[in-house]
Amino acid sequence: MSTPRGNLGRISKRANRYVRTLLTHGARSALRTATVARRAGRKLDRLRSWALELQARSNHNKATCALANKLARIAWAVWVKQERYEAPAA
Image (cartoon, rainbow, N blue to C red; front, side, top):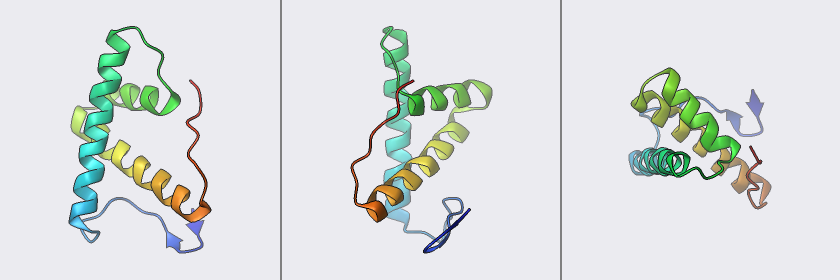
């Protein structure tokens, strides 16, 4: 998928280490809160449901990295479009 600023690839080690760390910690936290919310019987949005399904199919670290990548893409899109993020319902 081509974008105006180039091709969005994976979160590589060429990127800013601090931002990459923040995205990874945020993804890990989102997975943890999604797990707690599911156990409590609360409704989840599509992003959290997707992350938990991915974690069930693979392992926790792969799901964390994939969610961090998705969060980076969302953050980039919000930044470029200058719009608020509206989480899609499950």
